[in-house]
Image 1 (cartoon, rainbow, N blue to C red):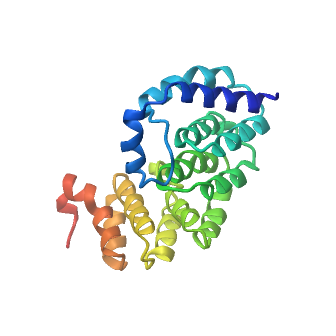
Image 2: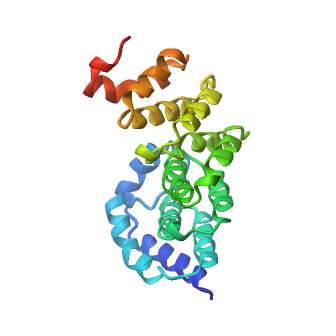
Length: 234
C-alpha cells in the first residue's frame, strides 16, 4: 500500500472511530442533507487530524494529491474536509499543476463548505505563489458553465487585503453581477465586504456606479454600515 492510500485509510478509520450520532443529524440538516456525516465537529476533527497531518507532512506532491482525491471519494463529509486540510499543508509549495486539481475538487461533491475553502485557501495560496496566473485563470473561471467554479473566481482574492488586484476584482464582479443565483450574489457581497476593510472608498464608489443585485449590495456594505456609516453616501 502506498503512502497516499495509507494516509487516506488512517484518516477514514480515525474519523469513523469518533462517529457521534447525536451530532450527525443536525450537521446533515445544516448542509441540507446533501452529504452524510460522522458527526464530528470542527475542533475535534482538527484534533484528530493533527498527528496524521504532521506524520505525512513530507509526502510528495503526487502522494498529497492522490491522498486528498481518495478522501473525496469517501461518503462522509468530514473526509472531504480532511482531504482539503491535507492539500492545504502543501499549498505553499504547490506545483503549477495543482490548480487543475483544485478546479476538479470544486466540481466534486460541491457545496459552499468545500468550495469556499478551496477558493480562498487553496486557490488563494496558489495565486500568491503564481501571481501571473491570477488574472487569466480568474477571467476563465468567471465564464465557466459550472456555477461553483464561477463562485470561486469571485473569492480567490478574499484574503489578499492590500495585495488585491482591485481592477480584476471589480471586473470579475461586473461580469457576474446580473446572475440570479444566490451563491453568486452572496459571493459578490462577501468579496466586496472583505475588500471594504482595506479600501472602503473604492467599494463605495464601485457600488454607487455599478448596478449590483440587492443581496450583493447589502452584503457588500454590511461591514461599512456597522463600522463607518459616514462613508456611505446613499
